[in-house]
Length: 112
Length: 112
Image (cartoon, rainbow over all chains, first blue to last red; front, side, top):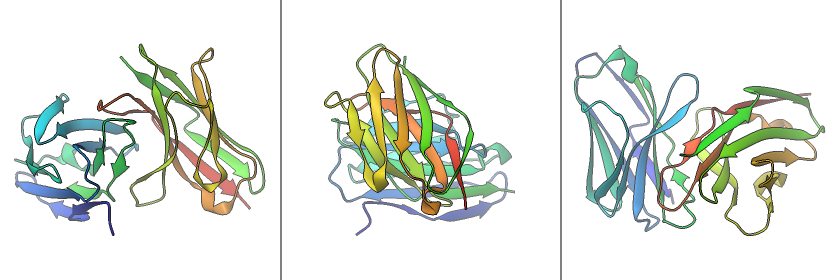
């Protein structure tokens, strides 16, 4: 049973397109996150939702819009894709204490 | 604000040798500290965590880390490296439902 799952695993698209990445967790956690890992492996938080409410919104272009239909799902929609959006995007989930975050397998986005 | 510095972006050891990956943190509140491992083309897996209990923390795969408040360090060690330990290792700091702040990662290479 996969705890945190993401689809798709790979996404190749043209500049200017709109795409979505889906994330689901079956751990019963209240908080979910999106992280971006760049080509140098640096991981940075993008968003965090707690019980479907946005609690963290880092300095991310507003072309990125997270949506949480319920506390088990956190999707990431990206408009007008740019070359610099190419990265691996990780979804994660946790309970508040001790904030042990469980990560999904990642989605490798390539913008051509 | 919280931050993490991992000393050494690349560490290379011989199989059977001691593994030491360094992590120093900065936090205005008592931190929770984590080590994650990322194998090639995979997501992050939790190795171990410090949550204000015992300062010497044992994790999976024979790894352990010691929290030293006076040195603001949380170095990761393993007495005897195995080829399967080759991966990227991330130290992270976080508290409650806050985001995790990651170090830049250390790539561990094991020489036969």
